[in-house]
Image (cartoon, rainbow, N blue to C red; front, side, top):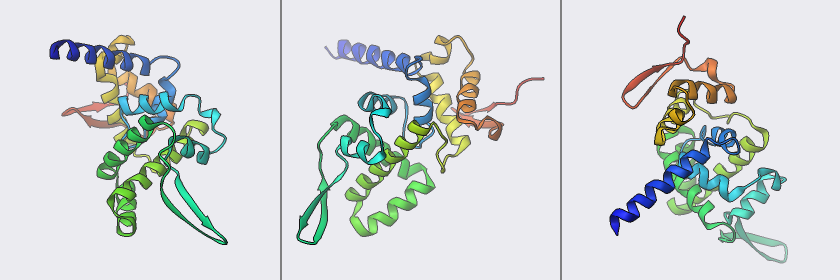
Length: 210
Protein backbone atom coordinates (compact mmCIF):
# COMPACT_ATOMS: atom_id res chain seq x y z
CA UNK A 1 0.00 0.00 0.00
CA UNK A 2 2.85 2.38 0.85
CA UNK A 3 4.47 1.69 -2.53
CA UNK A 4 1.18 2.36 -4.30
CA UNK A 5 0.64 5.60 -2.39
CA UNK A 6 4.19 6.75 -3.12
CA UNK A 7 3.59 6.10 -6.81
CA UNK A 8 0.35 8.12 -6.71
CA UNK A 9 2.13 10.97 -4.93
CA UNK A 10 4.89 10.94 -7.56
CA UNK A 11 2.34 10.97 -10.38
CA UNK A 12 0.40 13.81 -8.75
CA UNK A 13 3.53 15.91 -8.16
CA UNK A 14 4.61 15.33 -11.76
CA UNK A 15 1.19 16.44 -13.04
CA UNK A 16 1.32 19.60 -10.90
CA UNK A 17 4.83 20.33 -12.18
CA UNK A 18 3.70 20.00 -15.79
CA UNK A 19 0.74 22.30 -15.13
CA UNK A 20 3.11 24.91 -13.69
CA UNK A 21 4.77 25.37 -17.09
CA UNK A 22 1.54 25.29 -19.08
CA UNK A 23 0.45 28.43 -20.91
CA UNK A 24 -2.24 29.11 -18.29
CA UNK A 25 0.09 29.14 -15.26
CA UNK A 26 3.67 29.69 -16.45
CA UNK A 27 3.85 33.49 -16.31
CA UNK A 28 1.94 33.77 -13.03
CA UNK A 29 4.24 31.16 -11.49
CA UNK A 30 7.25 33.19 -12.63
CA UNK A 31 6.02 36.28 -10.80
CA UNK A 32 5.24 34.22 -7.70
CA UNK A 33 8.57 32.40 -7.60
CA UNK A 34 10.50 35.66 -7.44
CA UNK A 35 9.30 35.83 -3.83
CA UNK A 36 11.39 34.06 -1.17
CA UNK A 37 9.64 31.09 0.38
CA UNK A 38 7.50 30.24 -2.64
CA UNK A 39 8.42 27.15 -4.62
CA UNK A 40 6.75 24.91 -7.16
CA UNK A 41 4.08 23.29 -4.98
CA UNK A 42 3.33 26.22 -2.68
CA UNK A 43 3.13 28.46 -5.75
CA UNK A 44 0.68 26.21 -7.55
CA UNK A 45 -1.39 25.81 -4.38
CA UNK A 46 -1.61 29.58 -4.04
CA UNK A 47 -2.52 30.09 -7.69
CA UNK A 48 -5.12 27.32 -7.67
CA UNK A 49 -6.77 28.81 -4.58
CA UNK A 50 -6.74 32.37 -5.92
CA UNK A 51 -7.80 31.59 -9.48
CA UNK A 52 -8.10 34.75 -11.58
CA UNK A 53 -6.41 37.56 -9.63
CA UNK A 54 -8.70 40.05 -11.38
CA UNK A 55 -11.52 38.78 -9.16
CA UNK A 56 -9.97 40.82 -6.36
CA UNK A 57 -10.12 44.60 -6.96
CA UNK A 58 -7.68 45.26 -4.11
CA UNK A 59 -5.29 43.38 -1.85
CA UNK A 60 -7.62 43.62 1.15
CA UNK A 61 -10.29 41.60 -0.66
CA UNK A 62 -7.74 38.87 -1.29
CA UNK A 63 -6.66 38.90 2.35
CA UNK A 64 -10.29 38.52 3.40
CA UNK A 65 -10.77 35.65 0.96
CA UNK A 66 -7.79 33.84 2.49
CA UNK A 67 -9.08 34.15 6.05
CA UNK A 68 -5.89 35.92 7.15
CA UNK A 69 -7.71 39.13 8.00
CA UNK A 70 -8.08 39.92 11.72
CA UNK A 71 -11.47 40.07 13.40
CA UNK A 72 -12.50 43.54 14.55
CA UNK A 73 -14.40 43.95 17.83
CA UNK A 74 -16.19 47.26 18.11
CA UNK A 75 -17.90 48.92 21.07
CA UNK A 76 -18.98 52.52 20.83
CA UNK A 77 -16.08 54.58 19.52
CA UNK A 78 -13.48 51.94 20.38
CA UNK A 79 -12.36 48.86 18.49
CA UNK A 80 -9.57 46.35 18.61
CA UNK A 81 -8.47 43.48 16.41
CA UNK A 82 -8.44 39.85 17.47
CA UNK A 83 -7.42 36.54 15.94
CA UNK A 84 -7.59 35.91 12.19
CA UNK A 85 -11.04 34.97 10.90
CA UNK A 86 -9.94 31.58 9.46
CA UNK A 87 -12.79 31.91 6.99
CA UNK A 88 -11.98 31.19 3.36
CA UNK A 89 -9.41 28.89 1.78
CA UNK A 90 -7.57 26.87 4.42
CA UNK A 91 -5.07 25.50 1.88
CA UNK A 92 -4.19 29.06 0.86
CA UNK A 93 -3.52 30.03 4.49
CA UNK A 94 -1.42 26.91 5.05
CA UNK A 95 0.68 27.56 1.93
CA UNK A 96 1.23 31.19 2.89
CA UNK A 97 2.26 30.41 6.47
CA UNK A 98 4.66 27.71 5.22
CA UNK A 99 6.11 30.21 2.73
CA UNK A 100 6.40 32.83 5.46
CA UNK A 101 8.55 30.54 7.63
CA UNK A 102 10.93 29.96 4.72
CA UNK A 103 10.99 33.67 3.85
CA UNK A 104 11.97 34.77 7.36
CA UNK A 105 14.79 32.24 7.30
CA UNK A 106 16.35 33.21 3.98
CA UNK A 107 15.34 36.83 3.28
CA UNK A 108 16.96 39.71 5.19
CA UNK A 109 13.91 41.90 4.58
CA UNK A 110 11.34 39.42 5.88
CA UNK A 111 13.56 38.25 8.76
CA UNK A 112 14.02 41.79 10.06
CA UNK A 113 10.31 42.47 9.81
CA UNK A 114 9.52 39.19 11.56
CA UNK A 115 11.91 39.99 14.42
CA UNK A 116 10.31 43.40 14.87
CA UNK A 117 6.79 41.94 14.90
CA UNK A 118 7.80 39.12 17.24
CA UNK A 119 8.80 41.59 19.97
CA UNK A 120 5.28 42.99 19.93
CA UNK A 121 3.11 40.02 18.97
CA UNK A 122 5.00 36.81 19.72
CA UNK A 123 6.22 34.35 17.09
CA UNK A 124 2.93 32.73 16.09
CA UNK A 125 1.04 35.99 15.51
CA UNK A 126 4.12 37.49 13.86
CA UNK A 127 4.40 34.71 11.30
CA UNK A 128 0.71 35.06 10.45
CA UNK A 129 1.29 38.79 9.96
CA UNK A 130 4.19 37.98 7.63
CA UNK A 131 1.99 35.55 5.68
CA UNK A 132 -0.63 38.28 5.33
CA UNK A 133 1.96 40.79 4.11
CA UNK A 134 3.33 38.26 1.59
CA UNK A 135 -0.22 37.81 0.26
CA UNK A 136 -0.49 41.57 -0.24
CA UNK A 137 2.77 41.46 -2.21
CA UNK A 138 1.37 38.56 -4.25
CA UNK A 139 -1.66 40.66 -5.17
CA UNK A 140 0.60 43.46 -6.41
CA UNK A 141 3.02 41.31 -8.43
CA UNK A 142 0.23 39.28 -10.06
CA UNK A 143 -2.08 42.21 -10.75
CA UNK A 144 0.60 44.60 -12.01
CA UNK A 145 2.97 41.91 -13.35
CA UNK A 146 5.86 43.69 -11.71
CA UNK A 147 9.09 42.92 -9.88
CA UNK A 148 8.93 42.88 -6.09
CA UNK A 149 10.72 45.86 -4.51
CA UNK A 150 12.86 43.53 -2.39
CA UNK A 151 13.65 41.05 -5.16
CA UNK A 152 17.13 39.51 -5.21
CA UNK A 153 17.93 38.62 -8.84
CA UNK A 154 20.56 35.95 -8.08
CA UNK A 155 18.29 34.22 -5.56
CA UNK A 156 15.48 34.32 -8.11
CA UNK A 157 17.73 32.69 -10.72
CA UNK A 158 18.46 29.86 -8.28
CA UNK A 159 14.75 29.33 -7.63
CA UNK A 160 14.03 29.27 -11.34
CA UNK A 161 16.78 26.70 -11.91
CA UNK A 162 15.23 24.49 -9.22
CA UNK A 163 11.87 24.89 -10.95
CA UNK A 164 13.33 23.97 -14.34
CA UNK A 165 14.88 20.81 -12.89
CA UNK A 166 11.78 19.51 -11.12
CA UNK A 167 10.46 16.46 -12.95
CA UNK A 168 12.70 17.41 -15.91
CA UNK A 169 10.42 20.36 -16.76
CA UNK A 170 12.93 22.14 -18.99
CA UNK A 171 13.48 18.91 -20.89
CA UNK A 172 9.73 18.47 -21.32
CA UNK A 173 9.70 21.99 -22.80
CA UNK A 174 12.49 20.89 -25.17
CA UNK A 175 14.96 23.48 -24.00
CA UNK A 176 18.12 23.58 -21.83
CA UNK A 177 17.55 24.49 -18.19
CA UNK A 178 19.64 27.65 -18.52
CA UNK A 179 17.45 28.80 -21.41
CA UNK A 180 14.37 28.20 -19.26
CA UNK A 181 15.88 30.39 -16.53
CA UNK A 182 16.90 33.05 -19.05
CA UNK A 183 13.35 33.31 -20.45
CA UNK A 184 11.81 33.63 -16.98
CA UNK A 185 14.31 36.30 -15.91
CA UNK A 186 13.58 38.21 -19.09
CA UNK A 187 9.86 38.17 -18.27
CA UNK A 188 10.69 39.67 -14.87
CA UNK A 189 12.87 42.30 -16.54
CA UNK A 190 16.05 41.37 -14.65
CA UNK A 191 17.96 39.24 -17.15
CA UNK A 192 20.65 41.92 -17.47
CA UNK A 193 21.15 41.94 -13.69
CA UNK A 194 22.34 38.33 -13.46
CA UNK A 195 25.44 37.14 -15.31
CA UNK A 196 25.99 33.94 -13.30
CA UNK A 197 24.71 32.14 -10.22
CA UNK A 198 25.32 29.05 -8.11
CA UNK A 199 22.74 26.25 -7.97
CA UNK A 200 22.95 22.58 -7.05
CA UNK A 201 26.68 22.91 -6.37
CA UNK A 202 27.41 24.24 -9.85
CA UNK A 203 28.06 27.65 -11.38
CA UNK A 204 25.71 28.63 -14.21
CA UNK A 205 26.43 31.44 -16.68
CA UNK A 206 23.68 33.45 -18.31
CA UNK A 207 26.05 35.19 -20.72
CA UNK A 208 25.35 33.85 -24.23
CA UNK A 209 28.25 32.07 -25.89
CA UNK A 210 29.93 34.21 -28.59
